Length: 345
Image (cartoon, rainbow, N blue to C red; front, side, top):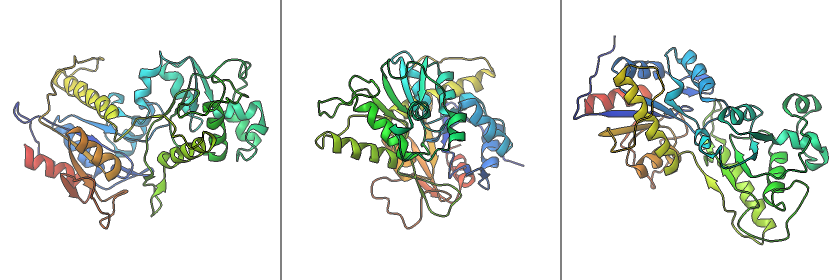
């Protein structure tokens, strides 16, 4: 049985949890993760999931996590790396949605009207990406025939999650951001740090933790390659891009609003959609529980949140933390939650 913790008006706290390396390792639950979330649910302490992962809708992601951790989580309790892209729907007509094949569905669910996936361009002309690793069967499954692919301009490139066919994806992104006014099959003459169309990355994590014993390259590594190739084609000018996800203030602002809204729903005991007016934060403290010092911990520190660094993911005890200072370093997520509650309630 869990001890029940209760908040008071003078001690309002909330939690934000990374997923990979904190709650799950691949598809396997990290010991104590389920108990940690159940304890917060029982104590009616608001929490959200804040991840640099993506590639699915928020509803699909929490359905998997809820089943895996045997605890109910609402789609209103999660911020994926690309969740803030919802705010771009009315700004761009045609977008290149880069990532795994599932991101087309995500972009369309967000409301984007004209979504092109990079596999559509490979299908249009295989010679565009001579080193693609996609088989014909995969291409037929993932791509669509787009009739006006070469006659309507692209308005933006949005990287939703880590793409899997890097050689092809680097070539296609380079083509679009170096094109003449966003038109496929063209190359601008001008050399500039400003791309032909805006490009957005949903996170900048160089490394992430999966079931393998060593950390793996993430979207941050892919972004560095895009930047390097762009500089080579533009007289070494630095690519101007927009990066969201942890540790950016943009994403922490978005996450804070989600956490405040969820707290309000808990207080009202309602399932109806609500939007709380912006104002002073109701929280005395918010604790970011993460495994990656370079995104979870430094992002929380810069935003004014407290942080709990766990040892179940990217972080290794031999790592130097010269650029950030976690509020606490603990073995795992359950120890993070219980220690915070015992010290603050």
